[in-house]
Length: 283
Image 1 (cartoon, one colour):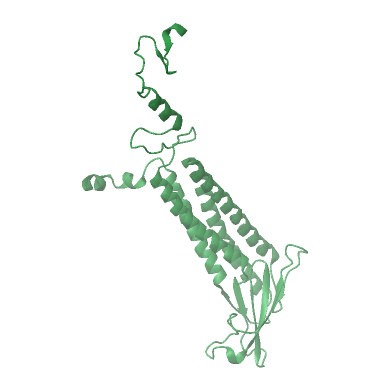
Image 2 (image 1 turned 180 degrees about the horizontal axis):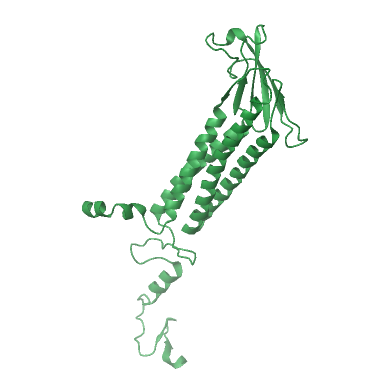
């Protein structure tokens, strides 16, 4: 077997019968071997995309679309964290002249704590019948709920909260945040490994997290209605505040981001399937 190869004076190896390379000339097989070792393509000199057994590698256009969809999902995550971490889910306010003095009391709470605030009646809009809004300056007092420690209900305006519904809303919100973290990890792995396979679990995580956020709002609203029905001695006006608005927008944005990831994970373009004649006419 070794007799079929020869070694030239310059140290190059070649098949028997082939002419040795001339002095000063470049070896004939060095360029191809170097190209194979470095992984460079011979067409255009561009970097070759990796292909793996888990699926086809993504192109640069697909990578840009994934980053754009990821930005949309991150907006939903930020809105969710903002809404879950604040206590302006609902505002409760009795009539501003209920206590027959110069001050009135308003309250607002979220998943973790509630706050009462004493306002001056003179600062309230004369056309407004109830005390508030809570953004007006006044003396505030906030306390954390004991749902998750001692299991005690909170009492506001002689009304008792329903801890089961409040805890259920909080658990749904926390589980949605966990799914957002899992989806973000999948997108990070997809971008770093250049594999489209991770887009499918990421889309499921973000869509489910958006649904759970909206479901948490529904459960919390039911807890507010049960709280108002616990005692009717103090008439209260209630309205959902800006934290709920943040969570509502977050749920919609997360579902849209998950749908974007699902479309990008498809092996074909849905636009080409739905509008084949239009594309053929344009070409």
